[in-house]
Image (cartoon, rainbow, N blue to C red; front, side, top):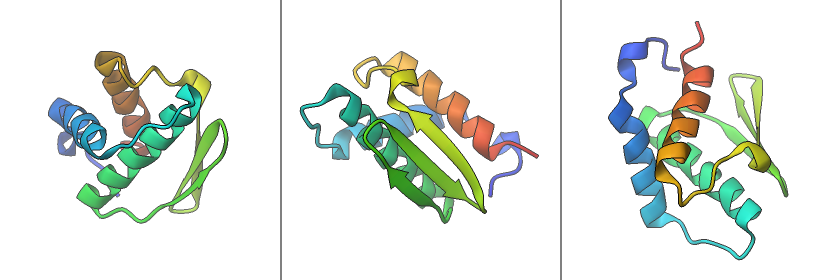
Amino acid sequence: MIKHQENFCPDLYDYLYSQTLKAYKPVKSKERNKILFLAKVIEVFSNLEAIEYDLEIGAISITLEINLKFYTFWSVEMPRIENKTQFVKYLSSQLENIFLKT
């Protein structure tokens, strides 16, 4: 697990967003798109950092389990995927909240 803030850089979130966008196949539902897109971001991030995790993908939320801790993300709180600036800001906030805790 990442423990030091210097392991994170602003470009990481842009990279995660861009890589996920390249590989992501959208579905018809906008809310479902946000859920599935975030799940893919978590997969890309976890592969980069060699993090073991479990995901439970629901209709309007994702529950992430890492080291016996659970984090839930709600689609209504996520910005639209098309708004890169807001989505990258959301990613940085959420990932730093999880991985930079001491």
